[in-house]
Length: 90
View 1: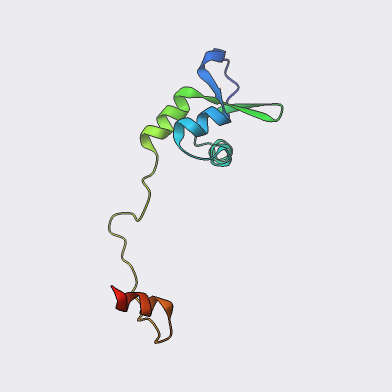
View 2: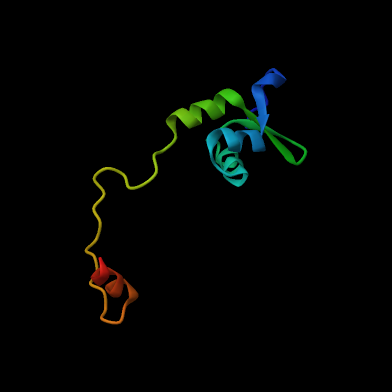
């Protein structure tokens, strides 16, 4: 969070931020609380600093496994397991 005065045109609300970032409003609030994006809380509403959100979007972590992550051995399905039946039909 920041208390630095910035022109009001540089702020957007959580609904606009979530739409722009492609995440939920709850996720935007978590990003604010963790300090990953900057904003100010006015009453019960958050105002997000637009350049901060744009920087997060440009550098956000990629989804999925990190490169070099090794998966554990896969278990063999039990005879009555629905996965075993699905695997046989493929």
